[in-house]
Length: 203
Image 1: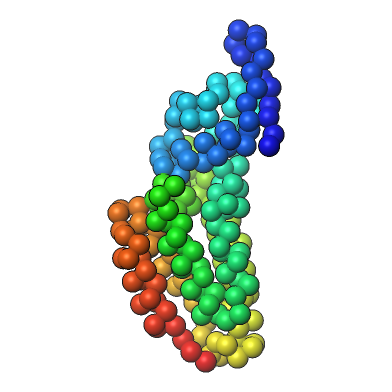
Image 2: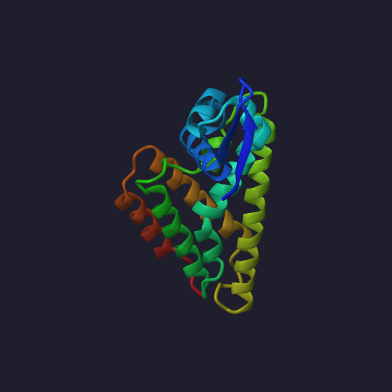
């Protein structure tokens, strides 16, 4: 656990845990989105001054990108685990069940940080959207590769488009994230997963 010592406006050293501060920043961005999270919101949640934030994390956009790293490593671990499942259908199910569990957790804000933050509309909006889209493209490529492998192994029919199937899965995941943010229950989301799996292409 890393800590940083900064100098307060009165010249007194102040030590804080960067790990805890970044977790707090993630909570603010996740709850309010990039645009909605003000510097006052962030510094209050992180328990640091604005100069300390800049010294430890850079500007707001840089802080957001570090928070997004934390979000992906901690909250989206199920997406990496999904790719290791033995069949394409189990890959999709692990993705969707993991998303449901994350989106209905009582410990975190509702919805997907990536979906929330791509609606940014301020001066930095293009940069934020591009960054989130680049990450999503990388995840999508890994999923498409996994579906191509499934076809080679005879697990997916040859006529199925792996890219289209990946887009469909992400569309379902994003739709569930929006519904979770709007108050959908776990039972509601599980029903979407069950219906999606019932239509999964079989070899």
